[in-house]
Length: 113
Image 1 (cartoon, rainbow, N blue to C red):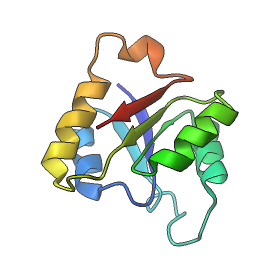
Image 2 (image 1 turned 120 degrees about the vertical axis):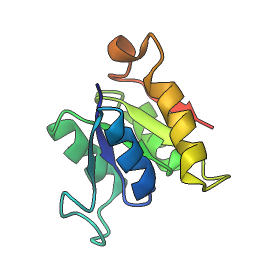
Image 3 (image 1 turned 90 degrees about the horizontal axis):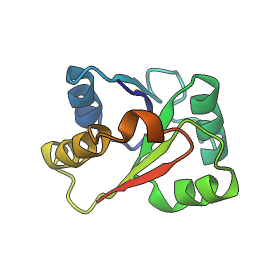
């Protein structure tokens, strides 16, 4: 299963649901990095240092980071059009359970919308 680092705005409920699927999800809050104004570059660097993919609602900035430096363990960006956790969870689950997932998450960007 995936090792994920959920950024500050990512819904806690979705992180919890991903854990029920067996994914190792560490949130910014659990890592002690909440409410510190940490730049996105440092969020990604922390995830890389802990061998984790970032999962985020911050699409623009993390797509930019991916394009600037695709050396990471993956970035999953989700939209925030509908904030219902179950809906977001369903889309994220679909992304994480594709047959290609295990071999392709590293160094890739996935858009969940």
